[in-house]
Length: 317
Image 1 (cartoon, rainbow, N blue to C red):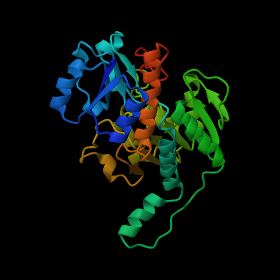
Image 2: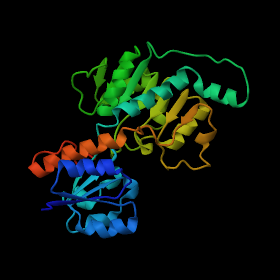
Image 3: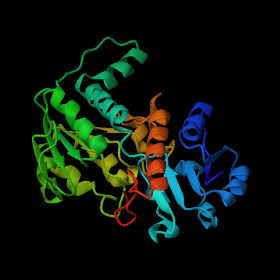
Image 4: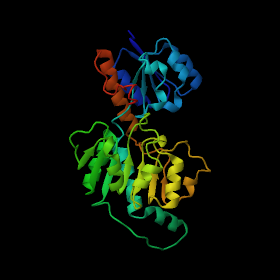
């Protein structure tokens, strides 16, 4: 007897569909990438597994829908009245991104420290020319946000011999690899001391626009900003000005206020900016980890137990 109907309106392999079905025989799973079919199937669905890019606000009007599972960690786009009022549960995929995103962060940091951004341009110009190179060892790494992603970045930072400082909403004992943890009141100190500042926070009313001209001016002129959080965490126009004027040395950006990044954005032309197309989390293991996590949430849901990645709508994560 079918007890729960699940709609997946995103691309997913049959292997991953079978993972859900084999673990929960009383569950029916429907998968489609067709928006019109999704509109029809969601009317009878209890659970929706989706990306924000495939999500439709009208889905929340479906009478049976009780739970939305986001395949991403960020859920800012899902915080709509039905979810904010608790009529529909929201879980996310936090906790599965630490490995690929932390490696992406260090790829960006190493690109700056070892001059790879310069050498890529030189190669295209067939130009044999050295530039000044530095090391990560001994440098100060500031991390804003200490969820699973920030924690993995800190662990790698310690392995590279960096001094790691972290800003955390609710500071406590220093996690593995972190030399010092401060609350938001310590943000100014971290800005001033960091050689590399990594933003790893969710997008909430408190974090929207948290890095602007005033914060950039507190950073070292040799510092590099890395943003793998959300584009709106940084005031992009102010960042462009800071990069153009040498207020900071560089920026490695995977996220932007508008995505895809418009062709007329001045960021494309800046030699001290490395751009990647919101891909830091991508990995061949991504969907396997995401479905494993969904199954843990599903088991808890069916047992009436706390769901591991239930989002607190009030906090936005």
